[in-house]
Amino acid sequence: MSAPDALLRELRRAVGDAHVLDRPEDLLVYELDGTIDRSLPDAVVFPDGAEQTRAVARACRAHGVPLTPRGAGTGLSGGAVAARGGVVLATARMRRILSIDPVERVAVVEPGVANIELSEAAAAHGLFYAPDPSSQKACTIGGNVAENAGGPHCLALGVTTNHVLGMEVVTADGEIEWLGSLGPEASGYDLRGLFTGSEGTLGVATKIAARLLPAPDAVVTLLAIFADVEAASETVSAVIGAGLVPAALEMIDRVTLQAAEAGLRCGYPPEAGAVLLIELDGIAAVVDEQARRAEDACRAHGASEIRRASDPVERERLWKGRKGAIGALGRIAPNYYLLDGVVPRSRLVETMRAVGDIAARHEFPVANVFHAGDGNLHPCLLFDEREAGATARVLEAGAEIMRVCVDAGGALTGEHGVGFEKQRFMPWLYGEADLENMGRVRGVFGNEGGFNPCKVLPEGTGCGETAGHAGAVAAAGPGAWV
Image 1: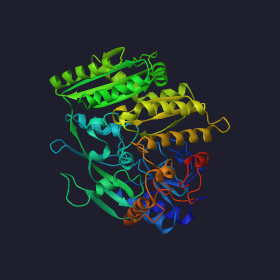
Image 2: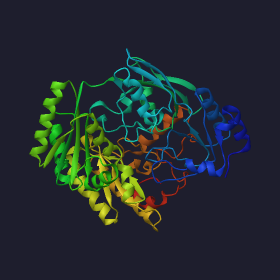
Image 3: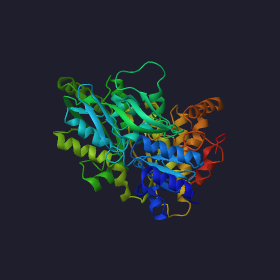
Image 4: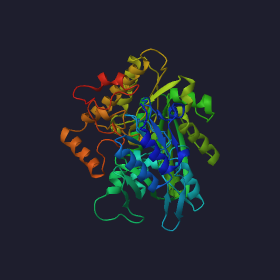
């Protein structure tokens, strides 16, 4: 199937010939994001601002062609996959930092600005942007807004929705609106908050006003080494129970430690069962006292060694291992399925044990590197898609792990979004009335089903099955909508 010729002509008039792709060899790059599901779009278009984005949205709507927004394609839930084909709207041309106000501590950026570029630009003013996904060198602010992205340093400071003040958006029906403000919270309904995390189902953000924070006076980074994941998990609750809310509290297991150390040479102990990477920041005297309390909690729960980064270079090396860990797992297997579930901290030990049991039963190695402080798990199942049946089996294992998280009193996602990957699991948490009301919100923004279809909410059988999805259908469980 290809996009209608009349639509392609309209798109080229709107954005220019050079900014519309429809050759199969060009479209291959856009058939997937950072997860397993794949679906080839019929065209990819690159608008350069709100007016061109509006023209694209209206053209696709008029021709009845699905439209799927896409940032850098680093998402991990299939949110940028064109599940019904149609047109992908990529934000790669909208990548300007429009302004930074160091007095008001607000930056206005376009959606294609890479996450790390915003903090690097703000650093000249002694400021930074708090949400820092592990993919921050590549992922974009627009994608972060769509998925309500988090990152290691969101334990104390919150995720994207806590750092976005307002945004210019093009709604699903092609209207340009401003949601929120550039200053303090506006009165009335929080449409900015509603749009953040809507995963491209309500529209596309074309400008974003982001809150900036002052760089901390002091930072202490600790690496606590444990014999096993259970001891490290118990320590997480102990640290929080001691009245501390670190800037970051990350766990890395042995499989990940060994891969990261072999590939990145970051100073990790490959023989350890697990480590906690703990970071505290703030006023120097306070941070030093908090670090001592964190060290005490680690020792009380069996830490065999605690290392403190001696300088910024060593700190950067420790974080290099954490943020580059997933890529390093390619030393073990050619493919991975990275999950994103949330459980209460008090259920970490039993949940991690269940994750290991499920992976073993399905005969997949599992690597764990995750935001332990807020119970946001990221089990990474390692496999080879060239092996017959492997993709179906890994999706079945993933579905079982997500069920364990929900049954533990948790949630389906902490930061990767529901996307296409987990929309069939939504009935585990929400009743029919809840899902119907969520669907009504889409209508308010003009989405009649063609704007990023098959994402977030279960939509019956009309979405078909992208490559990879079919194997998980049976694993969705009783009552799930597939």
